[in-house]
Image (tube, rainbow, N blue to C red):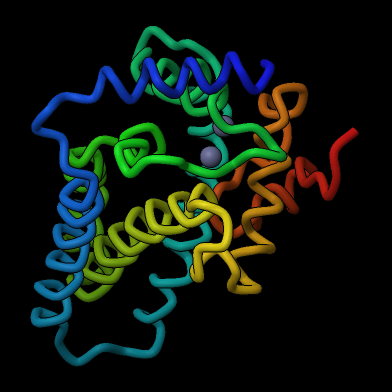
Length: 218
Ligand SMILES: [Zn+2]
Ligand SMILES: [Zn+2]
């Protein structure tokens, strides 16, 4: 899609932004919700055994797989289960931002990169059967680590993805670690590659394991 066509799409999408939309609230509501759950969980931890801490890396590792597979299954293929995920991602986010032009121009574009503010609450609710199972059948500490790590993962996803699409020369975008992760995601933003490559948006662990890690275009 030529730059001119993308600019007119950008204008159209920005014009569609409801007047009540606040980009900072969109970022802060899920952030505070996630941190709130982590904090409440931390208060309830009791006599943690060494093996219970393993719930943190294991949950992180599995969340990274869920990120990979959800991106592949629902964000780049229209599914009957949740077509909105595809609508937001492929025809909007991916048409607007391409490998060599990843930057937002306007703060209202947060809406085109972040998941809806209630998304983290839905993730908390849908993962609660696992939390309850762990609470009753493994240990309450493991359940709290699981819920906390899941929330930290979602908050991290939002902040990282947003940082890849920040305006050029933004100080956060200049950090070495962000530049590396951004490069990985920018390659995913090549329309020829987006359906199969670089499906992790955060740390590309499962891209590496499953062989969907591409270092350069072409
Ligand atoms: Zn993106
Ligand atoms: Zn994508």
